[in-house]
Structure formats: structure tokens, C-alpha cells
Image: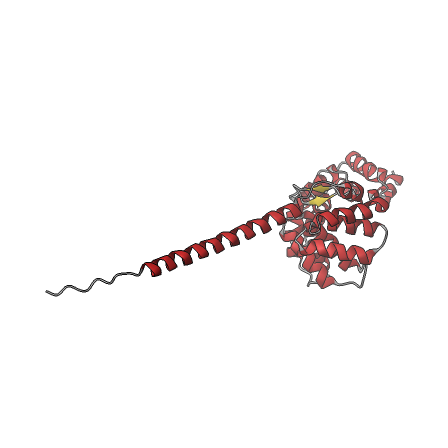
Length: 280
């Protein structure tokens, strides 16, 4: 029986193969390092340290509910604009600073500049900036009204879980602005925000139950949501809760409770509540 010839491998071919593998592994390692470096850079952009930009732009973000306090009146634009520009010179891709520079410009009514900086932050997925950008498009601030664009940005923020984005998206569905009116969608988005504790959304959800829009009319549920918002000091909900007690809708009639809630609302300047109390 004839045996096959053994094929001897050239030492050169073996060395070449090892060299090729070595080069390939080095390339893989280099690519991995670049990916890690880019990831670290992105993290630094998001997690830049607090600066004077944060102080003077007065942003007050509730990270749990993904909302922001209405503190635009506390922005000091004379200090905030240069501080935020300086912060961006050191951390140019940080959406927090881009957003806060937008706030500072909005305070000075430089709405075109505010729009530019909100857009930069929004495009990086910064939820609060997406909400503010949506509001500017909705109201035509810094340009013409663009309801379709408002919907786009409200939805992006809403899908990230931002309660203010969810509430604004609910409003668009409830009023048929930029989309066909859809009460069920409005209720769905209001509920998401209401369950995060946003008083405005709780009040609007109460209105939907009181009117039977998008849900079966349910005065008891209306009272529940009005109360949640009223307990947070939301004047419109306090007035509404007073009306429910006055009429015995969803609760037993109780004029003392009605007066108490109207007084709370009136103390905040609610004119309807003041009128109710005048008639007593």
C-alpha cells in the first residue's frame, strides 16, 4: 500500500501567517481603543462638571420625573450667556450647556439664538431641550408656527419618559393640533405624565374623566386626579375640586370643602375662585 507523500510546510509561509495574524490583532485592538475613547468622550460630554453656566442659567431639573422647574424668571442672562459660552468652549458637545445657553437667550427674547441652541441639544437626545424646542415650534417663537415639528419633538421627549413632553403631546391630541384629534391618545399621554406626579397632567386627566373624553365619564376619577394636582398647589385643580364639592360630583356635597378649595385657588390669583367666594 502506497503512502501519500508528506507535504512539508515552508518556514517562511508559517512566519508570514503569524505576522498577518499579529497585524490583524493589532488592528482589532486599535479599533477597540478608539471605540472606548469615543465612548469616554461621549460620557464626559454628558457628565461635564457643574459650572457657572448651571448657576446663572438656573436650570432646575427633576431627574426622577424628567421635568424641569419653571424658573426662567431666575435666569441671569448677563452672566449666564458668557458663562455658558465659556463652558461650551471647554465641553463643546455637552447638551446641558447648549440647552442652558438657549434658556439664557430665551430670557433676553433672542429667540432665534434660543432656537439654535435648543435644537443642538435636542438633536443629541436632551429631553428638556426637545420639549422647549417643541414649544417654540408650537407657538411660533423665533420663527413661524410649525405644528408638525412640535409634534416630532414632543414625541421624542415623551418617549424618553419626560412628563412635560408627554403632557404637551397629550394637549396636541386633545386639541387636534398637528395631528387628528384623538381623545384616547390624549388620555394615554396625560396618564403617563400624571402617574409621574406632574400636576398639570393630573388636572388635564381629571378634565378628561369629568367630560368623558377618551374614557367613560367618571366623576370619582375626576375628583381623584383633581385632588392630586390640588394637593400640589395647582390653582386650576383647586378650583375644579371646589366645583366638584359644590355640585356633589364624585363626592358628597360639601360647601365648606368647596369654599376651602376655592380660597386656596383665590389666594393664588384664580379669578374664577374669587368670583365664587364673592357670591357667598
